[in-house]
Each structure stands twice: as C-alpha cells, then as structure tokens.
Length: 166
Image (cartoon, rainbow, N blue to C red; front, side, top):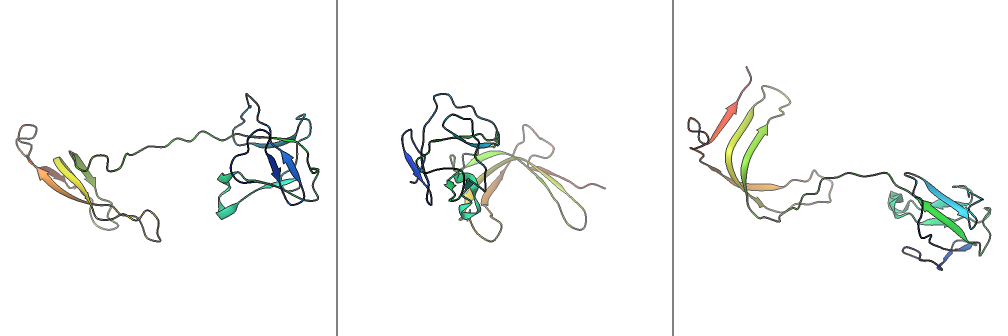
C-alpha cells in the first residue's frame, strides 16, 4: 500500500498486515509516533515491532514497516498516532511582481580590510538569469537595477550614501 491509509485499509508488511482506523478526534502529541493495539493498551516498540522508513534519508514520509518477529500478528488492528512540532517559516512569493522599487541597503562582510554600508534611497530591481534551486554550488539570483533619484527625500544626496567606518 502507498499513500495515506484511510479507515478500513489493510496495511501489509513483510509477513504482517494490519487494518487502519481513523479516530474522529485524534490526540496529537508533538514529536511522538505512537503505535498501539486496537484497545490502545499495548504500545509497540520501534526497532522491534516496526520501523519508520528513512527512504532517501528523509523520515518525513512517515511510512511504517511492520517487522517480522515482532509482537504484531497478521491481521491485527493497530492505531497510529503522530504529532509534530510547530514549524515557522517565511513565505516569499517569488516573481509575483517582475519589477520591484524601493530602498536598498547593502552591508559588506569583507574577510579582510574595511567594511562599508551602502544606502540607496530609490532603486528599481528586476530579476535576471536562471536560478538553480538544486545543485552542488551555492544558489545565486541575479538582478539588474537602476538607481533612481530622490531629491525630495534626500536633497543633499539624492542617489545614495556610502558609509565607511573610521
């Protein structure tokens, strides 16, 4: 069987199989995989009764393999409960706009010599070139841009400031 089991599906392992049931209101415990009998009184042991697939070195698939020689018997119904930790991320809607205008601040991180900070008051940027998201090298994203004049906001330096610490 592949995919996510639905209630009533039969899950088959080496010499064992089990029937999946889904509770109406499962109890999620962050970071825990719990495999129990149908009465939730016996908890099966990872590495002895089952193992979680690490296919492609990624256990996020959550595929469970029932091991022969374990406590599980063929046709036995099991309950599987899994919880996961909260994940936070930032979503960037890349290339939703093909041109962006705004302020650009660049702070150098030179391995030797002095550092600099560049503040451009108005710049127009457009992505250019290809970006390899998978590869052996660092991913790069190229831009072409135009520095725009901002006389109203910065009359003494309408394009940019370069800050060099002394």
